Length: 279
Image 1: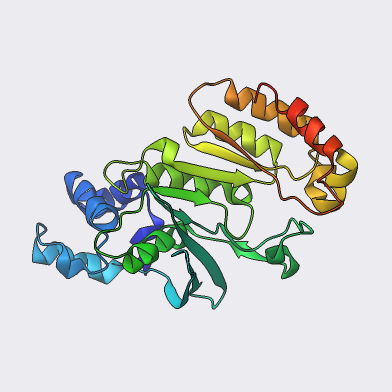
Image 2: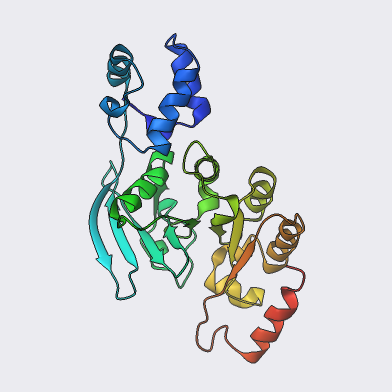
């Protein structure tokens, strides 16, 4: 069966009209699946029973299965989920004074092999489907207390989000769609290790914010830490960031993991300050 959570509004519209139904049915269905978050056709009470029965014959609404939740002393909740093919991913709910952020995984595993990251050590399995990205949001919401509200989403979990570009773009548009999750575009951030062509495409096609995992101030060190630097060196990444920042409508975050005696010298600090001028 086709999973409705793998569909954008445009996908649902095409499906519904192909069934001979009126277009407004797609809006109703989209709102039930994403804005109200139901996983049962019986809950869609403003649609006729015959129409709901027709939907049941063709579609389902599948999520992901949460296997384990670990809660830290500061309230951070990390949850492990299983996908349909038994691959597993992690997501994290991070509480702060004025916001509650969900950190979402974009892939099962990762192909980039960054030296400081455990995800890449296990290799790359596959990109996550739209339903599995969305499923992390619904799984997180199921863990919230009644007085909690999800305010921010960052794609900084397992995998390289921009290597799963099409599904990630659909996901971010859905997160900021008032008929779906309704977050402000500046509350959604996509992290990348510096895939420059995908970064440039993202600037054109999304209003969401970008975070770049930099972690070094010389190509020599970054080559060792992040093999992707051999393809997209620091200067190319910074040039793309300046263009992104020049649009004036999105935030840029620089991520820098400090490793003792590797990238934490005073010279590194000076080089970092200089290279990030204008970003």
